[in-house]
Length: 426
Image 1 (cartoon, one colour):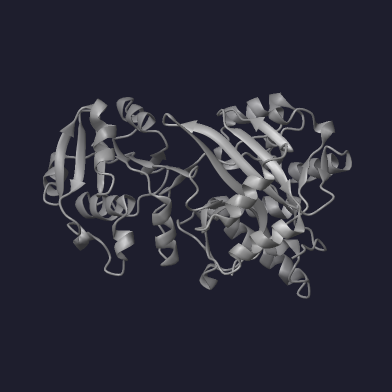
Image 2 (cartoon, rainbow, N blue to C red; image 1 turned 180 degrees about the vertical axis):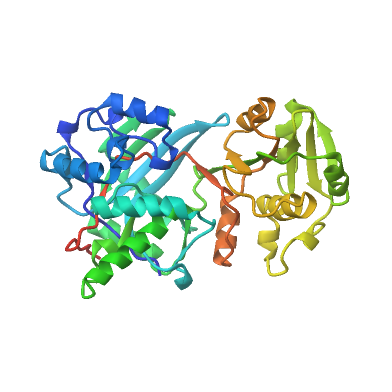
């Protein structure tokens, strides 16, 4: 079902200089302070394309990219390839290697149930990225999808390719080692494509990029209705990782409420549905780990840490929509949103950055409470990849920031040309 193709990546050439001074984090993870540092690193740093500091950033990105291609700062690979991409990293005291590949994935509407979403999205980022597509006519950054590979057939191909020297080997600012290889053997490419041809895939990260890619594709199709089906603009540059990859790490998205606190009355009501247990800060991680297979979270309001574990399966079903699947009802993030925020606290339609926000690290959420920046933090376990896959296949979209796949893919290792006339081979 999913159509995966090799492509000729546009990559930094030798004239660009040291790759460690060129790569960046994804545009939506770049703070103003990071922009300043990236600009200092190199006149050709990728931030100058994906998130220019100049006011007319779309026009600046277009002019800059055209000039850099003309000056051989960027060069286009001679042969189409699939790009094997490994990331070696350490998080929460453990070392991992996430193994994936970067390819062109055919854009399909969600209702065709080939590429499946798993989270809701906001309109703002899509408008911004569409303007960048229109200006540059390029996929500047890759999306991220999960695919099934129970027999580990694709993993074997990736490992075989990775026996040679990588074409990129660079450590980013978070001490993540990023390695890239070309898989350009037609037999290997066809075998990889064959494994996936009857499968569904799930967007792990980059929902905005994917939906924006569909919008841009529709624009180009309207402009050229007879363009070939193999036109590059019908595809999106994507990192693909197996759903059961040992290096696939998902971190929790801890929730903080900006204006609303947790009162004694709230806790009294919560006690009807959850076993409440006051904890010491040092015991929070152990509590969450112990209740990993239950619905649970820890609330912190600056005075105490309160563990909340569902009394029994289905205890909060009265707060959940009857059409939810059992898998969806089993998600901590759904129960927290529907049963606690909406049902018990009476908080409806929470808006990101206005009434609710999210933290990757529990210590940062706790610190925000202690500093009086937020009223209360809810610390959670991470959503598991298999939960993402099961819910996505049922067409159910999780609340925003339900997953945080770690680490992010660096930007600046590959780019894909979407210009009319660019055609991909099968």
